[in-house]
Image (cartoon, rainbow, N blue to C red; front, side, top):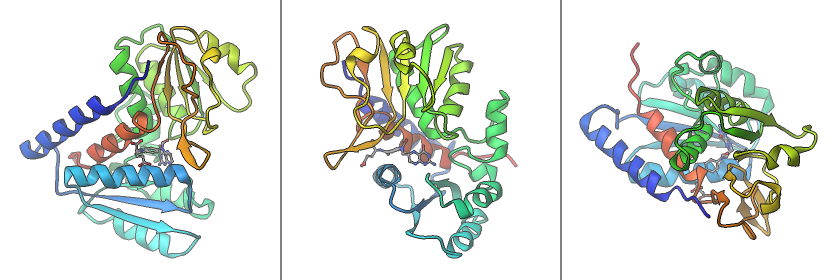
Length: 272
Ligand SMILES: Nc1nc2c(c(=O)[nH]1)N[C@@H](CN(C=O)c1ccc(C(=O)N[C@@H](CCC(=O)O)C(=O)O)cc1)CN2
């Protein structure tokens, strides 16, 4: 069975519009996106943000750099202190020469993807961050639209990055799930997958997970983005999946919710 995010996204968009009207979200704030190089996942994220921002009437400022330049730090410093900017997204991958400085200098209140030490530290310590990374939040929201109660569920996450795997681990622990975090050096990945109730996968290896790799009643949340035959596809090869197995599509799954949640975060009002 395919678990799409269309209806959840529509409901979320309606909720955001209503909150802008009521003034609980600040619809005048602008969202600023920095993209470095030509990563296909980052480009897809930016395309999704452009479309969703348009439908919400939110202004998006996009900065793109095809190579390292001092202009990056200049643009960043300006946007970081501009009161009109509600938040900044630094799309991964970020040029190594500036990554540390950008993440260190970013105002935690504008840190839409929760990459600053303040926001990460708060999430990992069970405190309240200003922002939590949008991709794991979207993945969890889609998962909970199918399985509300995750308490005691066996969950496997394949990804250990700071924007997906690590924050997802903490969000799942808060839901009382039993979590196994897998990665490229994990031995016997298929044994872990077989016994999981829920799998979150974000390896970027196109169509690398097949029906027979997971249990007959597994829920598979596909966060992966890879290229196959010139097209962007997920980690899961949907062909051959059984009716009893639930899989989220790419596109039309986690990504569509990710960009909407990120824009919602940008309009948040923060107390000083
Ligand atoms: N700072 C970050 N950078 C990047 C992240 C991230 O989570 N934080 N992730 C990847 C890309 N990514 C998620 O893993 C992602 C890709 C696409 C979308 C999206 O909005 N998809 C839409 C639009 C599709 C299209 O038109 O191509 C959809 O699926 O409907 C969101 C997140 C890279 N960098």
